Image 1 (tube, rainbow, N blue to C red):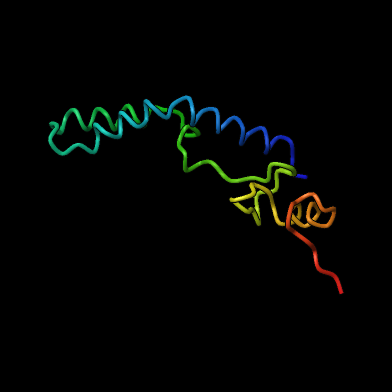
Image 2 (tube, rainbow, N blue to C red):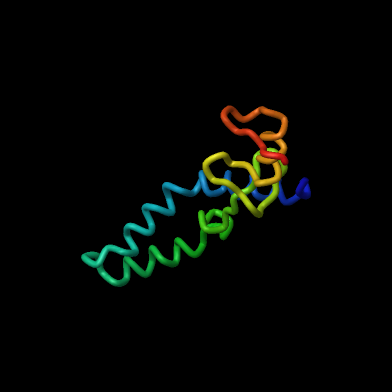
Length: 101
């Protein structure tokens, strides 16, 4: 199990990303538009820099929904390899059988 503080930090980042997504997209659109004047594009970049750093989607890290583990994460299932193995062993994932010999 991951530290609860790390899980909480990641959830806080997810909320910030969702909150500022529209504003960030609008500012990026202005900043990357070549037809706009340079001053307006520069002002949009400054406004973008004023937004919280944790509102950037690149700051998000995938974590297991069950344990919070950040490594060995399966995107399709949203769980880590260890949680997948435990669920497979107990027969809770349809069609998955853990082999043993």
